[in-house]
Image (cartoon, each protein chain N blue to C red):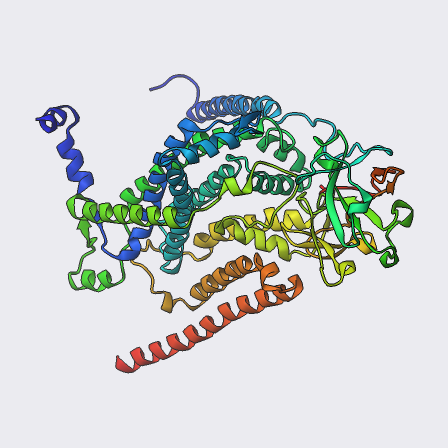
Length: 419
Length: 204
């Protein structure tokens, strides 16, 4: 009855016919983006719980007889609530998995060249989503206001401040003064729970809207079927009910994994870190910032490139230019590897020696920077590590490139022989 | 359809008007966006003026900055060669730039560019704020040979040599930690005797 009532007013039938019948290609790698979406939803839901209890203030309050910042005290109290600690852990773990899912999704799109015409716009929107997620994660670091939070944010503050010309203004704008300023926590709180999520919601909507408008790209196998039927048809399963069931299963499985991790691998033990104090313990950021963290360790201290009105210091090079350059290269990819005609089938990575080798080389380069984050524990000197990074990157690019070149020559030779 | 004037003139006139309107709109939009600079100015508070500036004066008492003895004066007798601690000038703990690492070494190990006139009985003190990205440096004690101990920042593994003016031995720190003078006084505690010998904190 309710359905009929709504249908008479909103013309749901028409909408369902158009939207719920949307075709989804059935391939497991097409679910990576969905995992990211589900991680985001989990973050929003757990975030609402945390936001209702968190106190964005650094004024000292009394907690078990000690004077600690109100923000820190409120997070300790959340951890003491029934289910409080587990919800905070699910929130943190969802963020770790969200960024991993986006990276996996991005790699799938990269290696199958699904960014080519007409999907360049969605590639850029996707990069924006990744960037926005990283900013959300970064602003979330500070909120518990533990010794870890303050040290990590202080590092970012000085990186921002080290930018020639603009650094002073940018750092005071982002951190509401000279960190640690009284206004930093309220500003980061607003950015973390309001502004960035709003932008992410908008970008996710745009990402999905463009996806629905352009339709999915298809696995290569469908090309032969289309060719046999002498017509282009998107092959797959409809959103309702088939894909919906699969998606729901993916979400339920995600909840299972994230709860398991939150229970057995707790992160960010703020009670152990304690409130801000004089010393700095050995600490490493979450995995997605290890890249920048490792790179910062590798940049030699005396490397300062003179610059009119300042100098590009190791901090600027490692903390701003390196991540900025990585994003720039990613953003340019669909405009450098162009297709003249609209592409609707995924490329076979084995048929694209340069792009595939470039992707592997780039991934290994970034992974080696993560390793560089552990040189103190591995006992490797920064200079030696730089050589390892260079060699591993060259090998990861060169070997696949030569192998794929050879493979494609043979493949073409065989095809020619057949015809 | 005839509205006076040759058509080409009309076209030109129309075009001009359109351009004018567009120009006005763009100028107004630029002005409106420019007015957002006010917001930016308000959102980025002015420099508090102090920045990373220490306010240690000669004669300030050296007190512990952490641990059970937080805030109590450091006693020279409790320090062996190879020991170190984070210290503050008494009563000035709120200024992070005042954080100092007090180290005691065997007097014979000091080499240039350590400023010997700023040391006393093997005590040497350096800014504890890493010159890379402002983390607090830590003391890595070598139990077997105390004079081989060194200062390390655990954030990005910059290593400083306390016997040679906190020279950078490795890692991304661009300059040494600045030295500050300390002296043991009659009651066995320590006081600062100078300002920092060079710039402190990140060089940004």
